[in-house]
Amino acid sequence: MAVVQFKRPAKVDDKSNGFAMNSRDILKANWYKNINARLVYIDLSLRVTHSKYETTFNGNKITLQPGQYVTKLENLAKSINGTKEQARNALIILEKHGVISKYTVGTQRNKCSIITLNSNTLNNTLNTHCEPVQKGCTDVVQHTTHTLNNTVKQEEYKTIKETYVKNDNKNASALLVRNIVKSYNESFPELPSVSKITPGRKSKLIKIINDKFTVNGNPVEFKTLHDWEGLFAYLQNSDFLMGRSSDWQMTFDFMINSTNFVKIIEGNYDNK
Image (cartoon, rainbow, N blue to C red; front, side, top):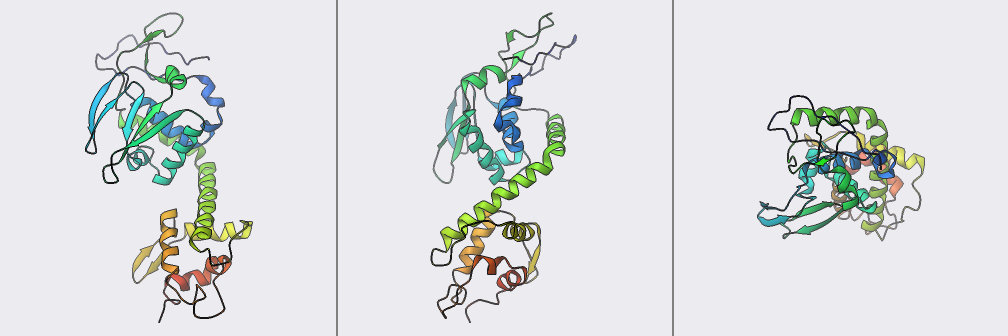
């Protein structure tokens, strides 16, 4: 693998955290095309510990080995300026491609994840300290940064996101649509299931996802799978929509019709 090479500046602050190096071959990896997987990988490669490290996180006493980092999904989402769903999907992608492995510790209340950058990736990403040599960097630094200057990190993320945000939003919306349909079919086994996501259905769903509603003076949005699961739980209480009061039953197309959707969330089909 060809490794990115740096030369250390003539004057180096004694408090310098060194460099985190990456193989150029990562640019060719399929997972690297996903913006959130890339952001999570960058964040992890800068945060994993370089040596055995004992810490307490979320009430759990944890011993981290080289190349590991402990976090919660919501913290990881904040670090990439994204949602929990985006962070979760990014981890799934990285784990599927063997870039990371992870396991969970703690109970439901104090649960957290220990993430490991796998060794073949770790060898090319963990902190190579760059001395002013002619042929690039060869010495491994025995010091790894646990934090990155927030301003620098945010600027790096901003640059990446501005470049890829359109494609990423498109991919994120498509994934959310698929998850909504899957959750709908699972939530309403008694109703006609959705067998195909047509362009028309996708368009109507995305319109609802991007729209903002107000019910009884309170703002209501349907931008996450959790929002839709809450709606499905609400709909299950309606005898009319579920077909318990007549032979008619709600269909998916009925629900996502813009006029019907507004009536649904305004309570027009609640039990009287």
